[in-house]
Structure formats: structure tokens, C-alpha cells
Length: 146
Ligand SMILES: C[S@@+](CC[C@H](N)C(=O)[O-])C[C@H]1O[C@@H](n2cnc3c(N)ncnc32)[C@H](O)[C@@H]1O
Image (cartoon, rainbow, N blue to C red):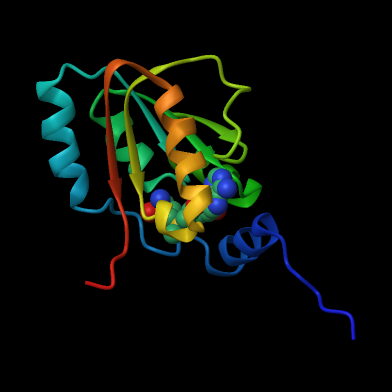
């Protein structure tokens, strides 16, 4: 029997096509913690991996940060470009960020890390670390069983 395995891109494209702005237009309240932290550290630029349709990029870009989103779903990227014209979006995987030569003062990543298997989490965090300016900050949220 042939098993049909959906790619990650296809899975997320379908979800965003069918459900649109799945989690609403408002950012998570964790953005408030990140905002205070970033502001006190004089952060200017923020990278948002797995940026979806831009509800968090929009929060940070509206606050005046220079914001870049990385997102594997082209459907989500198109929604994001419309929803948050102030940010730039790359349609790419967070596992290879070498195409982007910029470095950032901070990373905000909401509910993406836990999607990956253990080894991929290390690769992802390493990719993120490579994108930071010296002394840069990383702010991640994940689901927990606890
Ligand atoms: C649970 S959603 C969270 C979206 C967004 N952070 C939010 O809260 O609105 C996970 C997001 O990560 C994206 N994603 C999953 N795997 C990815 C990968 N390898 N590279 C880039 N984005 C990825 C999905 O397309 C989806 O937009």
C-alpha cells in the first residue's frame, strides 16, 4: 500500500488556506514581556522564525522595531505581507537561514520549537544563534506537558 506523506509546507499551506488567520489577529500576551526585555536592551531589529500570517511581526513592527519573519508556508507569507506591510517576510525554512546575511538584535519565536524532534531543535536553535548580533537575545515560547 502506498502511504501518502504530506510535506511540512503542504500541511501548513492547507491549514492557512482553509482556516485563514487561525489564531486570530491579536498577538500573544508574551509579546509584552518580550517588548519590555527588548526595549530595556535597546533592541532595534527582531527576527521572527515561523512567523505565520504575521500577528507577532505586526506587534513588533508597529512598536517601531525593524522586523523580519521567516515562514515555510507561502500561503501564510502572502497573508502576512498583506496584514503587516511594515515587516519583511522570507518564505524559507528555519533549518537553513544561510540565505539571509543579516544579523539581528533579538529573536522572538512563538510556539514553533516544540514542533520539531529533539535533534532538529538543536539545529534550529543553532541557526537562530548564528543570526544574532553579539549579546543578542532569544525569546522562545513552547507548549509544555507540565
Ligand atoms: C504553531 S504555528 C505558529 C505561528 C506563529 N508563530 C503564530 O503564533 O501566529 C507554527 C508556524 O511555524 C511554521 N513552520 C513550521 N515549520 C517550519 C520551518 N521548518 N521553517 C519555517 N517555518 C515553519 C508554520 O508554517 C507555522 O506558521
